[in-house]
Length: 303
Image (cartoon, rainbow, N blue to C red; front, side, top):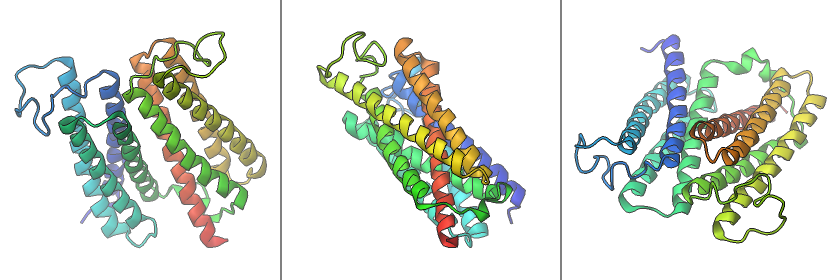
């Protein structure tokens, strides 16, 4: 009923739209557009078509529209993937995860509009949508048979790299949550210098906002050092496996870009484009780490 070519196109479009959902959420937060439609959902100011169209309303409605499109595309993608590729071990769990987390994302987004959730709950929104994005991305990679192109079917991964891959992926999720909390708690400019909170002064943060900001920077620094270590280990010990060597090279490049845009966000006083690139790089990095975990799960079956 559906050709392989159609499935590839659908998975590509769904992945791109999910990426725009991630960036749209960051845009809504950074521009203060979360209340662009008041406390009405799915309506906007109680109407299908609002009477006034300030920038905040346009951004919020655009984000809702892209999220709705993503929901439709992901539902269609998971249905076709389940039918055509259900025999592949990872496909059905990824389909379930994609659907479950995109609905969870929509519900938390609606709850945030209607009931005005606190910052700690709102910060979960980005992380939940990130899991849905990663699931769709992995489905897309399976559909395109990327493993075969990179000879990943013959991988042998030792326990050391397995442990660090699992651990750094789990840890980076907490880093992502802390970054989302920085945005939602309006702590982006709590510290106006970088890397220290106050230029030339070494000491503990003095208020809640500084604690949120500096905690995120500390966690990000740990992630940078950790991924640097894994990159060196992979480059030295897995030269025969392109997917590992180049994959961790890309991971290190992405974490460098993430740190750079984080610093520039402070220096430029949260330039909108830099902030969006900051969200883009962490989304790509998390998706890449999830792909490594899928490779490890396949390596386990062969070892």
